[in-house]
Image 1: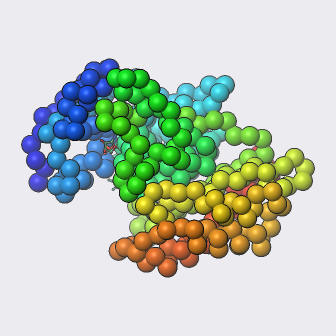
Image 2: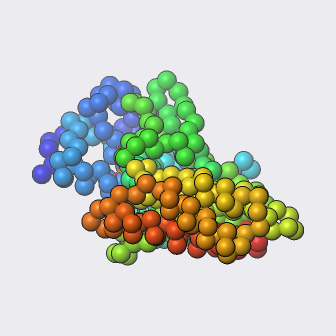
Image 3: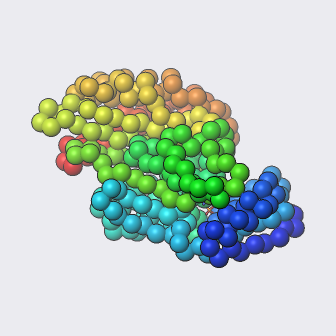
Length: 290
Ligand SMILES: Cc1cc2nc3c(=O)[nH]c(=O)nc-3n(C[C@H](O)[C@H](O)[C@H](O)COP(=O)(O)OP(=O)(O)OC[C@H]3O[C@@H](n4cnc5c(N)ncnc54)[C@H](O)[C@@H]3O)c2cc1C
């Protein structure tokens, strides 16, 4: 059963930040409630004050600027999935969203809520890591920028300070000849990943050599993680099937998966091995035709 709470509905970001500052540890932000309400029903979280920010339209937008893509924290998954500019220029984000939860959840859940929930099995963070995205947080003292890669500190824990909100996700334009891909293995369609893998590859002009690569794993450690040793296998070399296989093997050793009701640690390592090779191959193919 959900414990009683006082429900607060700020009308502006400033008002929301003032309420967060006022209630400190007793106040909890709710956006779409798709994750938070589950925790509240399970009695794992029982905030005396619930600060509903879903109505802050100033944090719901998708803007393409010369310097990159800006997504407001309250933008829904569905809006990202359907955005023409994202489909055209950051298609891996739209593809990831298509496989996140059900349409109902995507219609109401927000990208910011997903990131702040920091579920190691969530889909968006690994993709945003390979896209080299940056987050903006806001508090009464001002704004901070945090690389998505550094945002998750531990299992369901983030770098957000008390009194801070996530306000924006910034994705820089990809360099030329860059391709990105994402997939997840899950037993139940539209459920969280048993293992998720995102890869971005940048190839050299003409020579097909991998100039840069970012590999991010979901559901493979307490937080979404970069597989840097696997990246090193491919960086600076021509991408071949043998090297892709080796990168998958290395990623499976640097992952730190657990056993749970969905899969054993060993099974997850096997998934990492297979999926890293497969997704890196797809990202390389996309880079060739980018
Ligand atoms: C049936 C079901 C299936 C799902 N499947 C998937 C899936 O396949 N893949 C996947 O990735 N996710 C999945 N999810 C999770 C869900 O889609 C996301 O976690 C959801 O989008 C969270 O967004 P929200 O707006 O509902 O956040 P809320 O539940 O409102 O908030 C989540 C957390 O973030 C905090 N928060 C929210 N917004 C902000 C902000 N702007 N600044 C600071 N803190 C904030 C809240 O205080 C809370 O701690 C699933 C959920 C359900 C219910």
